[in-house]
Image 1 (cartoon, rainbow, N blue to C red):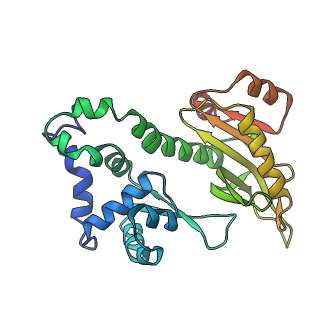
Image 2 (tube, rainbow, N blue to C red):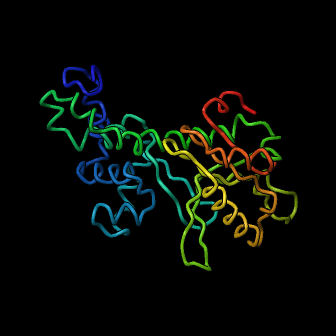
Length: 263
């Protein structure tokens, strides 16, 4: 409230300047809308198009420009060929789109205290949640010991898994692949995971991951039979889930303190 949400401080307009100063970003309203869509959790091209009321084919140019400008990161979906998800690269842009832009007039009127007080849900879901997911993915890729996942993680990302039996899709916050095998063998999938910032995770999330692993184990070219089931939460876990994790070596629980221990 003293700095970012204060009209008298430079950070207040920094996110807008980042877009205004780039000569390639001519239609600023469109680019703001695209970034707002991503900040609201719409990471696919179709999701972004639906949010802003455009055709998906109309977004190729603005998405490419935002990616080239370093404001968006495109991450290919490892489980769906040709599909990608986008996320905002700069945390200040995420904060601006999730918290500041919807209440810009009130902020200019120096009502930052009121805006911040009613922005808790948007801040948690739009800023903290995605940041925590990426932190856990980077922990799996760079800091977790090989014993945690039964191998060295070579790639970690989010993915969407299709369930043909129910004609639904399962969003996986983490899919961690091992190093590619020699020859034509199946690629090892070391872990799949559910990552939530503000929600206590329990047995229902574990069962959901178990269902996803069964689906992946049936896929050709993929060795997912021994994939670990990772559940990460900043809010903690139910006693039932902790008990299950204590009995099962394939279940990995990650809380903020474990992120710093590396094991």
